[in-house]
Image (cartoon, rainbow, N blue to C red; front, side):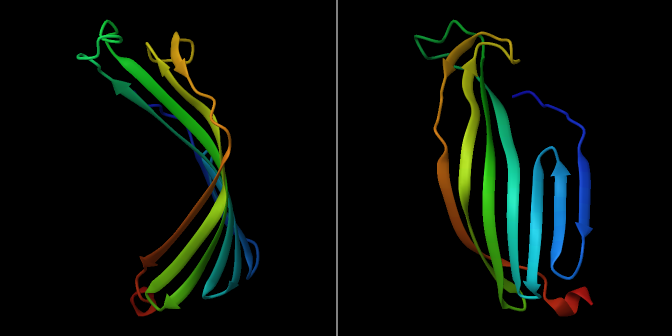
Length: 141
C-alpha cells in the first residue's frame, strides 16, 4: 500500500496513585487505573487501519486492473486487566468490541477512487488473553 503520514500528539499523565492517561492522538487513548503494583485496569479506545496494494495478474475477472487497493479501518473499545503473576511474569485479559469504519477494494488509491467492492461489517465482540514477560524489578532499580 501507500504510506499515510499524519501528525501525532502524545500525552501521558499520572493524576494520582491510581489514575492516569496514556494517549497517542489520533490513534489511541488509554485511561489507566492502578489498584496496586500488581493490578492494572485499562479503558482503551483505538483506531486501527491499513491499506494494501494488490496485483492480480492471473485472475480472469480483475486482471485488466493494473493494481487494486484494499483499505480497512476500524475503531475498538477495550477493557483490559493486567495482573502480576511473578516479578517478571504477567497475565493479561481483555474484552471489548470493534466497529468497522471501512473495508473496501478500489481500483486506485485514494478516497475518491472508484470502489469495486464495499463491505459493511457489523460490530463484533473481541476477547484475548495472554501471558507476557517484563524485566524483573531489580533490573529497573
